[in-house]
Length: 344
Ligand SMILES: NC(=O)c1ccc[n+]([C@@H]2O[C@H](COP(=O)([O-])OP(=O)(O)OC[C@H]3O[C@@H](n4cnc5c(N)ncnc54)[C@H](OP(=O)(O)O)[C@@H]3O)[C@@H](O)[C@H]2O)c1
Image (cartoon, rainbow, N blue to C red):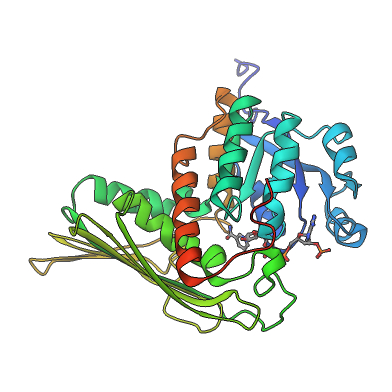
């Protein structure tokens, strides 16, 4: 007896052609995780950068990828099925808008834009052109977050009362770098604090009070920000972000029955998750997965794209809008404004 034809054949995965806009550090990590995607064979078809050198260097690692330094030529002739935007923040809006107007689906790094009006306008374009737009809030899709959300939703720690999170990285003090340059949307809040805001929004929704304070650089960006959010004087979030000092990057969610800690680095592959209940019992959950973890975000994007929706259920437009609104309130309180933020 011979086995049937399909026996022993590995299923053929559909190919998916990505365009990369902003071929820097995180774009390399995003692409490196293509190998762990189970649903599609993803590859880099085209790269756009403002400098030929950076696009060509990236292309050197991706055989057959075409290099563009003219964005109009990229959106018209590259033939990509979707783009991943990973430029400095202040260019997210410009490139996402032009791609959406050409009906090219967009996965854009966090923060989606540098202001609420820009985020609102991108969402409007996604709806108008019926084209997928997703903010690359990668933590939302990590197995650690799936576990955390499951634990909270199942009521393991009871009603959430307190969220404490810190995100920090000692960025090189270069006034021209994307961390410190206001022209590029520099500062701790939009780069790192956005994760802490997301954690708070995930479990608390819209706060009714926001109090923020920041230490600012000579050029007026926030090097270190602290934010207190509260809702109906029942729920509180204490959030800290810094590009100046290294704090302990843990996230702690406390409810009336117990506390969950996602250990450092909580927005990447954490050392683990611990739970301590009020009765003294404890549990430790390991966090292991292959690669960095971008594959989970990419799979969510591809799944949404396959379904024909313009909005991802797990990172809905309302969440991106709320993040942008809160970021604008905080920026206003701490006196941070970017030259590019009004331009829509
Ligand atoms: N999800 C995450 O875990 C994560 C982690 C880090 C960063 N990010 C986000 O990803 C974005 C990029 O961060 P990164 O650390 O990768 O920065 P990066 O290493 O500086 O890379 C930025 C890339 O964009 C290019 N670029 C700069 N200006 C451009 C323009 N006007 N048009 C087109 N390309 C331009 C740069 O080219 P040149 O080098 O030639 O200037 C470089 O290739 C940021 O928005 C950040 O928030 C996300």
